[in-house]
Length: 308
Image 1 (cartoon, rainbow, N blue to C red):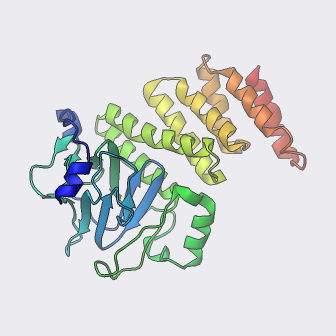
Image 2: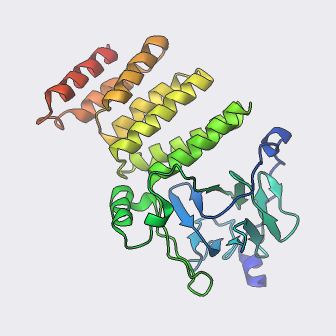
Image 3: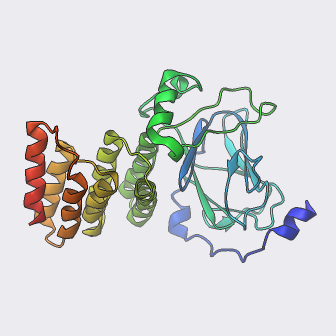
């Protein structure tokens, strides 16, 4: 234990969370859950899930300020999810407040800070695209999900002696639904700034993945576009319309009919849209639509009009 402290730099505690952020903690976090870190998502149903810098941890964080085995997420017998600080050098912070006791019961949407890495946890909802019971490892649904999202969804490593339940994986689409649903609840309850923060962080993570070549399926792209335009409505920032075009550029994909209609309407209301991004989209699509249908060619023409 002492060797871990000696090799993990100690950092000052972050500022405490504001009252408004803490007040949105509502229902207890119940399993099954999805654990989200920038660039990765894990589903967990029962037993323990260790988080740390060591390769033997279930969730490995490449952060020098995270201890080798920093913390443990655990599903209790009643389904309640807890986080335990495993004597880490820098502690565990829940919504900006350092955990004052080893074991802390978590609530829906809690944000965990380990070192300088933020980890979000959500309970899986009944509205998920694929029911949890069907995402057991080895099933056709999981196989397709793994092919679609590649390294965006690392496989969860569950220690056999700690959990007898099958390993689960998640789709990026489910994550957008989870984060978007939480953002909707926050916005409805008057916490618009928090809603914007939660949703924008996830969308930026998706764009970062697309920019380095990770595949984004068409239905996820459409969902992300809808959420970006929702952020534009909440903030009145044209940067979120620009984001939608930038995401399509990174993916090299033609906007769907629904996305294009929404983008056309947004561009009419927001004259400050970066038209150069639309031009980049045309360049990204060049040569990819040789066998395009008549309807797809019409969409391309409409995009050309938006670029003017």
